[in-house]
Image: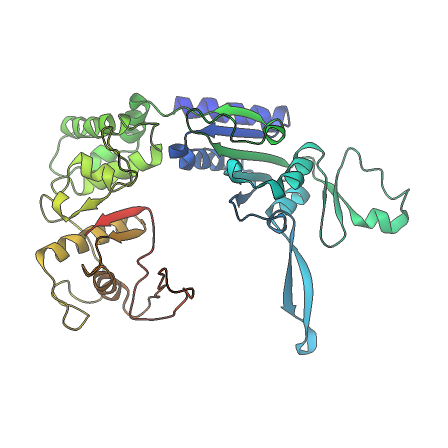
Amino acid sequence: LLCQVSHLKWMLQKDLVLRQDFLLLGSPHLARERRHLLLLYASSIDREVEYVALSRDTSEADLKQRKEVRGGTGGGSTTIYVDQAPVRAAREGRLLILDGLEKAERNVLPALNNLLENRELPLEDGTVLVNAACDGGGDDDGDDGAARRIAVHPDFRVAATASISAGERSVLDPPLRSRFQGRWLRPVSAGDMLESVAGSGCYSRFDGENEEDAIRILTNLVQLAGQTKDGVPLQSVRNAAWYLSRHRHSVTPRAALNAHGITSASSEERVTMIGARDILAPLNVTNNSRISNSATTIRDFVPTKTIHKVKDLIHAALETQRAVTLVGPKGCYKSSLAREVALSRFGNDINNNNSNRNNDTHNHNNHNNHNESQQHHQQHH
């Protein structure tokens, strides 16, 4: 898209021409779009990347080195320091992506600022990353001092993303923000969305529809997506278009958007879902079950019409490599349905992760259950 080309051109100038670190800013709803744009840029110029997802739990060890105990010769063990993504990127001249810069805690800001401004970072194993332009060798400290200094590669660059909501201009730490050249990413317009969706060939997948009718359906889908407050990721719209093209007679455009977390303009809910009531006709799904769809794998499990509809929704999500969450009140057979789908699709090759407020142990290997705590594609039962 033309709007993406302008962003790519800007990043190219900052990275390869001006040799500056850069920052992509925008709405929290478009965080995925910014990540995709950075990876698209790196792929287009064949640039190696290192990725760090910043969070409240990120520590200096996640930015420098971690101490690990590994088995040594003779059955013993040895302790080594393992370089983390920022150190690897600095040494090898890669593009370091810092995702979620607004989440960086104050305890990691000194390390980040030092790396960004001075290209210096002391490491846990006693070595020090230093700016190659300022590295004078080991004259002051002898050969041992030279061995402890590691010059930062001249091609090392930092690309960061940050989410800022309307009216929250002071989220980023001012000294940290001043280290970057910033660019604000606006939501993609409805016209650009339609161009992207039509360019992907989604209209050709509408069975029984001519190209004109398919474009009309996609236009309706894009118009609904364009009404979403603060914009939506372009890739989510394309996924919803593919979903709708495959299940055109089973779901409405609004339901296809709900299945991909795209809210309506009038909705005040933070999470959107698709449910059995949204199915107009049986879905055209390939469940890849090892057991026939009419049979059940769990004793005393009674598949109702609603159960069959929700199972089809789950299989439709799995076709697009989407994670699934079953949402509903206590006692409505969410776990049983998850086990039924998992066992019928994957056999006994499944894993259970039992998480609740009264249980601090979350890793239980149980080959008779399915992890229902996945996120993103949400099905309402």
